[in-house]
Length: 384
Image (cartoon, rainbow, N blue to C red; front, side, top):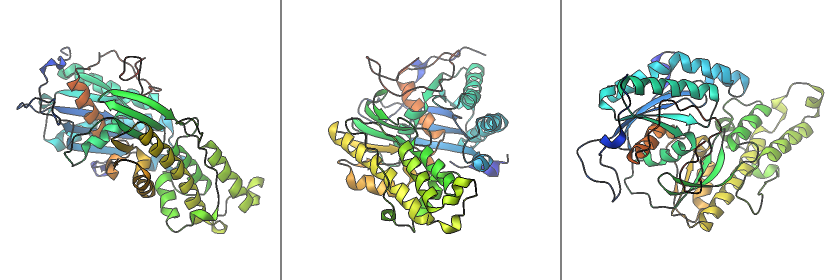
């Protein structure tokens, strides 16, 4: 992989006690030292590295995308993803350091996604981070991928400190979750999808309609000229819970397409020329957005959130952003497009706050493909 394909987006590890930095907020002591963390992300199909300073300022942010490799499958092929990570991850990390004009000696810690995600992909990034920590003496920080998505919202240009509690909607290809963030590192998992994640539903419906991968942008593009009211699709609100379900909507779309084009039941290929693709895309998108907006806005009101964070790949959807801003009872914060999908800047940002809390990890940690972001009885991230 050429650098042009990247998106610009032996001693024991040192103790975290050496860190003293300037951070936003009244509890931070003013010091000359800047906290610089290298972030590494390989949880799925993006190989990424970044350097972030003080949890806010991005010094570099590179992503080697695999989208073109997986497009023919209509989704991520895990073995292909793992092999591609092996091929490019070292060069991505070197390039991120070069872009930041830093060396390992200029860093204070290395943060890496530990989970959740694809085990074969996670292990590539984690092993590289362990090697860097072992060779350089830098502290190792294993980061929860969902927590990292939340910290993408801390990388915005604005300098206003975040007031807690914050209601976080994490919506991506692998996750749809409502998290109440009561402080840094203090989370309560309110609800999550019981089946397909919203982004996964977008991908599967896009494949059903003969659209390109990834499905989210393809459906959003097609829906711009469509009429959402042309077809009435189900909304699974799951009243009395904060959970989500999109499998029924996906099945309803399949039945609708089969009704519009009965010959596909006989194994004949889909003839998209005879389908109202814009209307189908608009109706599906509207159904997903309505559920996400209603659940998130009700939860924000119920838990008296000061802000509503929307993060993850699906948060790039402009219709979702507009609808959420109109319905939410509090200000809505969304990341810029380049920080919506998986990236290492958000991992490094989360690592900065973990470093400040003196929460380093040993070199014998393993990946956690099903690592939940929530609370134990005493608070904090649920550990195995």
